[in-house]
Image (cartoon, rainbow, N blue to C red; front, side, top):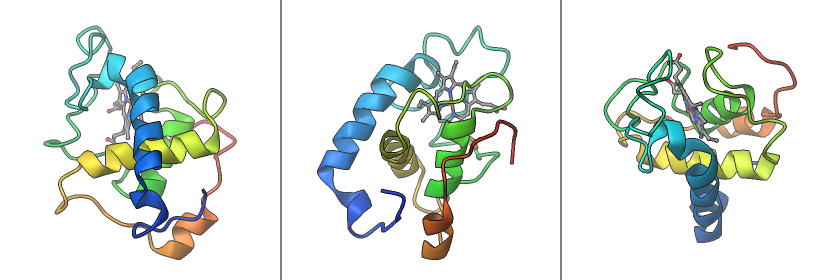
Length: 126
Ligand code: HEC
């Protein structure tokens, strides 16, 4: 699934269903069930997760930037998921998050960039 095509593969219902399941299990405790940044843990984290719909992103709003964030974790607060999730799961959950960002603020990858995307092997904030 490393090949990004917003018109076909990313629009498939099974990817959304798979991504929503990952989000419910792994992300909603911090990010909230609908991504508003209001999960049960949000108040006790040293950094509050942002509201995907209303707040700007620090690390980019294209699918491959979101997938990089999910794989690596961020700021020592959000855990890295590259070991816990498969690459397909990372793409699927990234697509769910991407769809929540208002259309005028989210960005697309140029296809070449998405095809170059690889599960990052190291931690850090690239
Ligand atoms: C332990 C809590 C926690 C969990 C679990 C978690 N996150 Fe996060 N996440 C955060 C925090 C806190 C930030 C903000 C870090 C910052 O602003 O420096 C963040 C940031 C992000 C960002 C970056 C937004 C930006 O500004 O660019 C994305 C995308 C994201 N998370 C997606 C996910 C997804 C998808 C999952 C599940 C696979 C997940 N997170 C799981 C706490 C969490």
